[in-house]
Image (cartoon, rainbow, N blue to C red):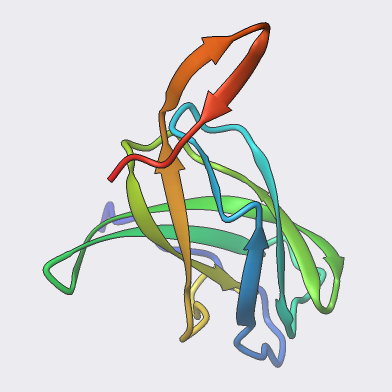
Length: 124
């Protein structure tokens, strides 16, 4: 019918549980690698990270990118390019069922450059 559907890998998938991301924020330009800690991560080609933009308690936008399996308690993802804001970060093993919990993740702009280094601060 012309609609795109996620392909789900067969298997008895557990929904992952997310505890934290390191770092807990990244530049709006995207492309930063973050390490995510949790439980029940699977070595799956459908391992995903999802950043949700929430406005007035409703999800207004979601960006989904592939993750990389490290262990059952650790995965990594590259951050997307997004406007400055605080997002909800969730994970999935099968591309459909995302963690019930989320961790806050802040997208920020670079404030200024000084002395060859860059100071980055969250935007509110």
